[in-house]
Amino acid sequence: MSAETQNPIVLEISGTGADYPASLFAPSRLKITPGKTTSLLGPSGSGKSTLLRFLAGLEPLPPTIKLTGMPDVCKRAYMTQSVRLLPWFDLRRNAGIAFELREEPVDQKVVNAVLADLGLERDAGKYPAQVSGGMAQRTALARTLLERADLNLMDEPFAALDAITRRNMQDLLKSRFAGSTTVLVTHDPAEAVRVSDEIYILDRAHPGAPATISRHDNTAGGDGDPAEALYERLKAA
Amino acid sequence: MIVRALITFFGLCLFWQGVVWLFETPPYILPGPLLVWDALSSRPELFLRHGATTALEIVLALILGLTAGFLTGVLVWRSARAERWLWPLLLASQAIPVFAIAPLLVLWLGYGLASKVTMAVLIVFFPVTVAVVEGLRRIGNYWPEQAQLMGARPGAFFRLVQLPASLGTIGVGARIAAATAPIGAVVGEWVGSSSGLGYLMLQHNARMQISIVFAALFCLLLFTLSLYGLVNYTTRKLIFWTDER
Image (cartoon, rainbow over all chains, first blue to last red; front, side, top):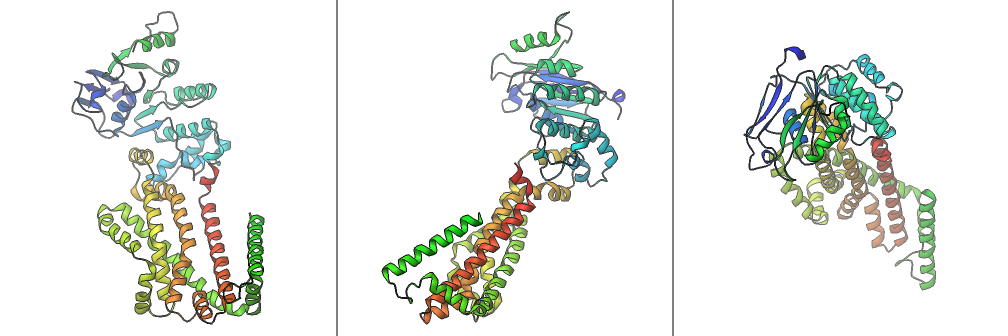
């Protein structure tokens, strides 16, 4: 499915429901452009991860929320902050586990190529307990990449990593997922600016109030630092 | 660990022998460890013969109990209907003391191997079933959700994710089974048998040959500890990732 022929995926929130999770959101709209990376930012508990789970189909949609533009057959990959590799398999098998779970033949050449691309070829035979958090995270990224999903959903995937590893992972995300539809939940304005084509912010009047989803204009900072402008915007959220 | 175990063993023997010397207990009440060693070393073939019977009962019970417990656990985990029907029966089976049903099992299955093995299986079966059910239920949401998104086949998911994830808990059940299986076998031998360490204990207890009773107990202890060690080693080797964390 090519990005050019796809319609945007739109989550339309028509009202605030009485029950969770519909009570999290105020009437607003989230538009995900095919082939682009969209970041979601907002305070903790504002519903970023819940939106991602709606998109993944892991959470049933409340009557106040409508999802349009999602293809009937849409392969989705979902990467979270906690990597949770399977500790009984080495990194190579962890990377290609989706093929084994579907009982499809695993193309070891492709798996090895992706692992090499992420700098994991020398450690591919190691078990998760024998590698660093960064390597485990790269393995999870390899797993997501190998899925070649129509929609990549990432929930704070690099939040637990140190600054250098995090930066490397952001670069990998930017380069390897270029052209694919990706939605990233993050708390980090710099990360959002660095990897995203589009940024959405979940604003709340006060903690516990329903959040409004609004698009952030990445050029709003003028000549200044866009990450700083986004940070200031988030402080007000 | 072996050194620690040997120090504890010989320390206890020393204390025991000291009590016997100090209180001059008659050998038909409490023989000292030296007398027990005499009994053991003077007739090794007796203990080997009866020990082999008990060992066979225990090993067969362990294999059957683990298999039946595993299959029942999977069934209870997989089917809510099976859980509703089987769980009360399983609980009821534990509410009845083994001693109470031992005479019935001997009556129905005879004095041979079958009644003892069944008795030990009844003891082993429940902890294994519970361990399997708990282990399979403990997987959480992450991997089932990933499997759903990946389009995983249920059989592959069970084999590659669910079962390995539950092996740690199942291993605990297997270790409990190894430690408790001898209870069933010996109780069965006490109620009715013509060989085995339980039979040996009962026969010589009646003849006031208490050193032989103690020697048989020592053989049972040695076998149980060895079996537990073997099961412990195997499960830890098999579930290597739980030690690495």
